[in-house]
Length: 408
Image 1 (cartoon, one colour):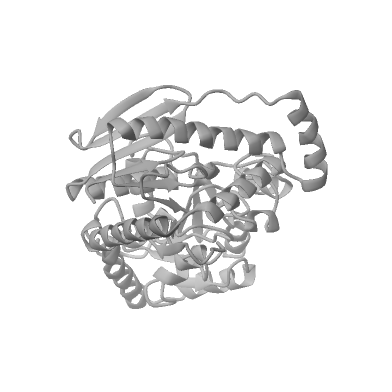
Image 2 (cartoon, helix red, strand yellow):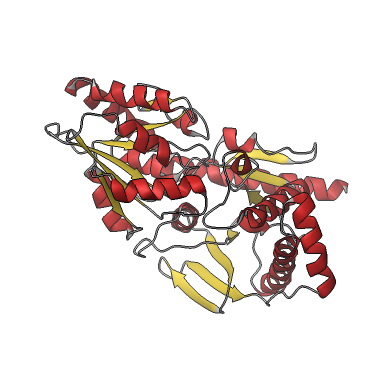
């Protein structure tokens, strides 16, 4: 394997004034592979046609314009019936399917001119529903599953019927896939596979390296940080409620990310963010500013109800920070409770309160030990450490793909 292509809905440069886990993942993966001498190309369906080169012209990024989708009158009528009975947007489902077909058509022609050895579809919006069949390909799962419906309505400001259509389409794409990868075993176990499919844990590399800073004097006012989308599914309400039980004036809570006002619970969170005096809120900021803010924190809490082993977890540990996270969604595969971080029962306010209380009662020596363990552990996720694993997994997927195709 020497050439790899990524197909993604999101690509974010580190200096842009926004953040995104998927975009960050693609950036880190592309840099790692290009440093190893692989030829990397990134394709993103969008509204314009453009291309750029990064990392000394070693990585191609190309955005390509998709044709607009226009449903027929019959499809619109059928949409209203299905929406009422099945609770998903039939029109949006058809749009996703049309987009996937157009993505396939574009890539079929693109790879005739610029062939690759393997394609990785980052499957938000079901981009890999119609893969290029002549080239080995894998699908990396998204965090959008039926759990989103179990834990509330809405998704990044989208209506519930739109979300349901997207979940349905992504689930169908997994059933069609030959190779599926994910950032954690916990997340992969949410996907039902058939006997011919290969399902593998693909490590997430960290895009930068930190020198471990010595723990200076404990701040008189504790700085607690959260970095990510500010909504119910990320558990921000749990964090606000848990910290509100702390002694007033003893801490500041820093929330950085996009506010989503798409449901009653998220509206309540938004009201709390702007009404509580102990909360300091900032919208998405450039990566260098974000890292500087994270470095100021004494404690980072990532209380997700649903997640996909987020980049922020590894980045925080790489700074030698104490991280509190749920005992699910890949956190429990990285954090050993009270050794290199702190775990709490996923979705439990009382358990989160106990976890924060445990941190508050650590001695300086105990806190230094956890921070040191966190920093040491996360070195296993540095590019050089995981590069061999990632390349082996890609080669294993290529061999499995060829084997399945030969038998069919």
